[in-house]
Length: 267
Image (tube, rainbow, N blue to C red; front, side, top):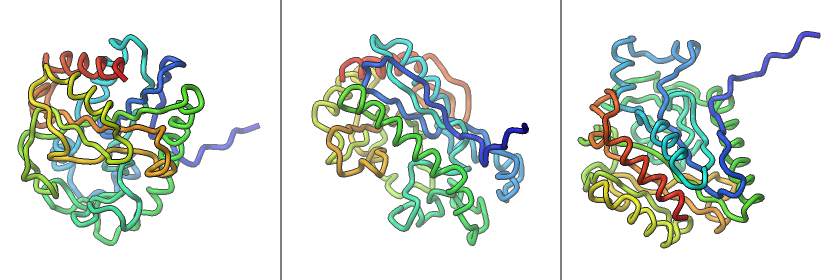
């Protein structure tokens, strides 16, 4: 009997860690992959799309998380987006709550990093939201639920990167841009998690809080409701570990992975 074809290709992968680990390293923006049928609605030519991917992709962050997991004394779990954020951005609100709609960067982007056109402004986001965003959100919610069930708590550490110089799409790009920026949430980032991160990244240069990016990712089912879910965003300035934009990783990657592993073990 012929097996039915699934309605979508999963855009994510949950990589198991130690059963006793509450930590989930979330890597949402490391991929450059775009399915062919999604590419058809992007108006950029191939060269311009490659340049946009250079700017928008958090290059090598999946490698940083993978190496940190290998170095940690207790292996964390990892949830990795295997498609580009130009398909959908799983960290945006899927509705009018999302402030990045102001620059065409809600759950489905219509604008570019330099405030050009990526897709037609009247693009209906719902097909991509249904195909990719909602399954991703459900799976991430289930991953957090799994850590809660197994350990009584869940710690989501979001692994991102950002460019040395602000890009035009940034709404809050005028502030400090330290080598490491920690994004926090008043409800979900307890002081012990923040302090552990400041200590872990102390050898990587100045570590700042909530500039140029603030907040952190928590599945909506738990957001503002479940104090047992802690969360922190780690934003790494790209020139500390790679050639910008979109170039190869350098020796700084290993130091950052070691610092992330130290944070995993500290919490």
